[in-house]
Every structure is written in structure tokens, then in C-alpha cells.
Image (tube, rainbow, N blue to C red; front, top):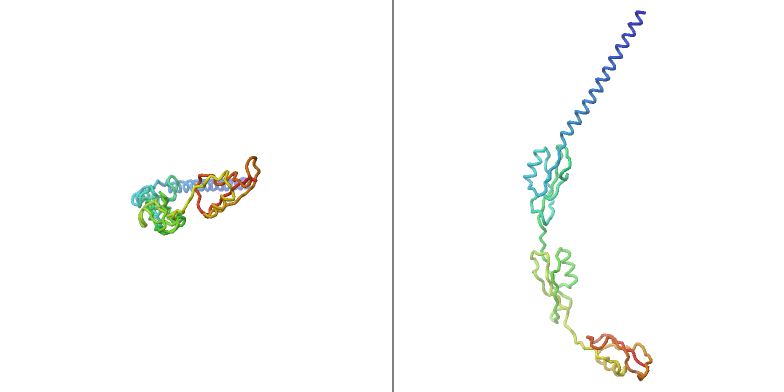
Length: 244
């Protein structure tokens, strides 16, 4: 009986020792995890806003936080941020970064300076496309009529090529104006005689229809297109509606 009690006591003592060791292991694991989590948290810092600062100013701010600065070589144009100042950053301001993660920044190249290309001697359409390709708009488009230049060609530009500007004025030659006439009122006139007279002067005349009209003899112009008073040039088409 005493031997049995001694064995039971030894087992119970061993069990308590195992439980104690298990509790100590759990306590150690929990403490280690909390310590690691706290250590990792202390390495996290909030990234400041570096936009608009110089490289030296940004480097000083990041050094205090334990974050290195990395300046990208490529610069970006911006009309509002002066050349040499920080235009963008990664990670963005307000985000969390872990030491020693570097913060990349891109510097501004300042506003883009456009140089006006030479468009004199080009057609109007070609000049427009070339200016659009350079990011330059057409401020004013004027025209002349002259036999000294081909029709549709740019004969002058302001400012001249090579100047720094974002808009340009163009002068385009529309070609020498040909001889024009005022369309006569032919209603009530003999259609055949009117047509012959117009054709002699280079107009294309067609009598498109014949309509009966009470009290009007056959072959008289009832309607015309264009109407009397319109400006016309040789080669234009004229249609006459004739009575029958």
C-alpha cells in the first residue's frame, strides 16, 4: 500500500512539473510574440509630405525618421512646380513605411517650353498638324488672295520659328479671286435664249423640268436656282424650270 502511494505521488509530481513547463512555454511564446510585435511597430513611421521641397530639405526630414531618400533621374514637367523641387513621391505622404525602406521622389522640370516650328510654305492642314504635334495652338488665322503664292499655303507666321510660345498666328493665301457675276433674274425670260447667253460665259445650264402654267407661253422660265442677286462664277451650275 505504501509503495502504491509512493508511486502515485511521483506520478502526480511529474505531472505538475510537465504542466509547469507547458505554462512557462506558453508564457514565453506570448511574451516573445508581443515583444516582436512591439519591435516591428516601433520600426513603422509615417511618411511626410515632401512635395514642393528641395532635395536637401526632404533628406533632412527623412533622415530623422530613419528613411533613406532616393531621387529618380527622370524629371517631369509641371506648370505649377518650379524646376528642381519635388513633384511626386512613393510612398505617398501619410502612408506608413518601415525602416529602412527608401522613399523615391521625382523632381519637377518646370513648365514645358514649346518652340514654334517653321510652318511657312506648308499647306494650311499640314501646318495645323505640325503645330498640334508640338503642343502649340493657332491664336489667329488670317487670309489673303494673291497670285504670288500657291493657294492654301501659309505665307507668314507670328512669332517666327524657334521662338518660345504656346500659340501662333498664321497668314494663309486663299488664291487669287476669279471673275464673278451677279445672277440675273431670269423669271419670265425665254429659257432657251437665257441658257445660250449663260453658256457662252462658261456657266453650266440645265432646264430641269417643264410645267404647265396658265397664261404663260411655252419656253418661259418659271423658277431658277440660284436666285437672282446671288454671286456666281464661271463653271457654276444653273437650273431653270420652264413652262410648256
